[in-house]
Image 1 (tube, rainbow, N blue to C red):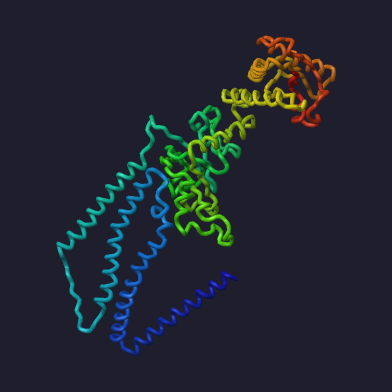
Image 2 (cartoon, rainbow, N blue to C red):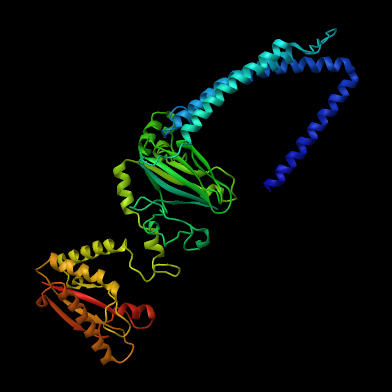
Length: 498
């Protein structure tokens, strides 16, 4: 219905314009061509002069009225170290071109009035004027030279890469329809290698997990954090079409091009809280964020730094917004500690994992810390059910009591726990699923428990602190009705006794 009304309005406007044209033609025929030209020229001159009187002040007044909404003015001074150079260059360009804008519009509309058609007026034709030629060639040349020199200086400052000895943080931004995938380095401070041939549904960036630098990389799915005062180098690329990495408040803008990585280096100098406090000083930002809720939060309270795509990359272009929070180094560190490795939490052990049957160096200290925490909680718990812990990373050869080599990491953690807590004793329990002969399963479980006890005594744990018991399939953790449940029931655990 709305479309039909629009079409009807367009048709009616067209009819009105056609009729106005016809009336004008009829008026010209009645008055005569000469008289009609005279009237048209007079009205053109006066209307041009009136337009100039209204237009130029309106431009100035509207610019002043909305200055606090524009980047570079009011509360919106740059939030990055380099942004001041860009704002300064923009202001210089605005001043110089603004002078030309005002003078040319005054000349345009004044001349339209002054030299309107009159009886017996004859046009004067000037074929050549050397002085004018020099002026309108030399002045723009000097102005352009000034702008170019300032621009090159700003470009060299803004686009300089980081030095080898500089302290900086590198992150990666990959644009895709319709999302930004942001990757942070892990504790090693390095981003791992990528190969587009490895891209899958579960490995969207094509990370090469044979590269150990990838093992601790982080891909946050919610708000992103940056530390204030820390130089940040952003690797920028795209997976499908052209995108643009745009952090407008930091004066950061760079194309994300498939197959051609780019970068941008900037240093945030205002935290999100500091920027909000600047906005708070202006009445425009003390208005309700939601006009329908006048008692709700103000505009300044809801302000966030936004990462946008500044290219029209498709119908879902609008949804590429991500929130960046700039915080103190302490706040950033606290947030960063909560982030989990993408590889270890989302990809480890799954199909396609090139390290599926290996214990990685990065996992050893993580498992040790987790194990120590679990033992401490079990000792402190008053609930007897909490005193039994499964040795998740202890494995045996199939149908055998021979420990696999990678079991040593978990068992060494148990040795450390027993040495750190000499007051405790443990019962080592061996368990199987219900596959096969129950008597054979019971015997195998006893042998496996004894193998763990032997490993511990070989490393100095007193035999009197250990008791090895095989339970066969008598204590399942889950029904033996699937391969996954049977795998849970095939385990070795230990129960703490004081």
